Image (cartoon, rainbow, N blue to C red; front, side):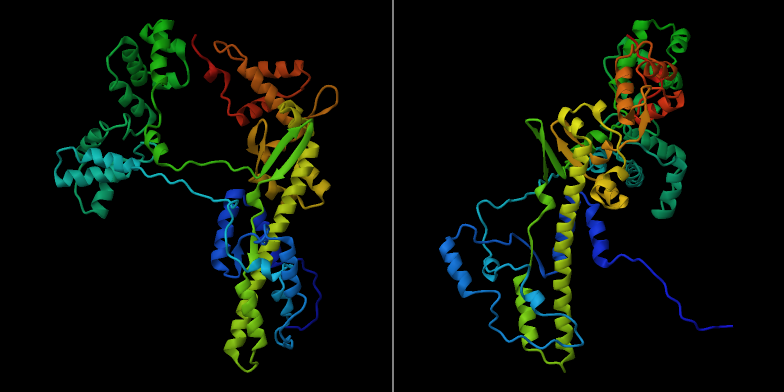
Length: 497
């Protein structure tokens, strides 16, 4: 049975302005520039440019001009506030107390920053293969099948699709009937193309295609071909003694064969894709410098772009409000449209400013916590630090700190790296002091770097070494840290001298 009743609820919701700020906060510098361009395209009331256009003008002339054009003295009659539209026109006519004369010019200065985007043009990897296919004497049917095969080769140069699946694709999509023998024969032709190894279906075939094209056929090359063809699994697992016993290889023979294999390219397609791929540069969001044992923090200027509200839209709102006809619904709709665009521009500019302030206070807190590291560059000096530590200092939510740290780069005298790499858990050494897991990983990495490659240290031995240095850590924890550093197990680190 339905009942009517009154109920009070307390809800907490984010306003559209807060949502916009959170989205802007998590963007790195490069994506922020794209987001600003999108906003300028969508909102004509928002413009890019400095607020002050006459910085070099004579001060006396500027003062006289301000006296003649005082923004506080309005030459127009203020319209009555429409109760249906609860907003004050004066809020939009005067934007952030910027004098109108500073928004009147549209000139550029010799000091303005001119940004250019370098462009590169080159053949794609598939186009390179198709150009070689055109040099072969094939029938129209064979040419279509070969083009389909090339279209299924990935950027690394491998054919990941099964031949039987290719036959089905050709039948359904192109209405071409073919068979396994024909497709395999055309694949063998493609595998003769440059770069060597292209069209392989797995790593073993890729390396074999390359080693078979090497000339002259020296003993190390022949031994390398035998090793790849008959003992590939043992080679990948570095079972060198098993290989030597099976083929009667001496230490020198095995080493020379392995050296030949190491010269091969496991991803032949990347040699061409790198040339056509646009260069990706890391743009730091923060710049930290050290002068006389004092740290200086600066925010990348691209994080604080020059944005302003369009003077044209401000004047448009002023004229429409002064000549408003309350009975004209179309004019009222136009007035509300202009108001919404001006509101959106104001909110966006405020969000950019709040983003800049949040980035600065967060990075300053991190600098204070990790001051010793930023002064020395020694990773063992990194203190244990989690998001909550920074949030407690700047009095912001942990999610806000996470948005700042996850995608921002910091440039230091010791390199440029992600800000989140400075965050780490803590553990206690034998003296009861809290140390960062980054410190333990650095010592672990140094131990592996200095090991004898013919007899690499195992996880058990690494555990003992760390215990001698005062870090009582379990073997499984050592294995976890080693995997996080992308370091293989001892057997796979073994090398022949």
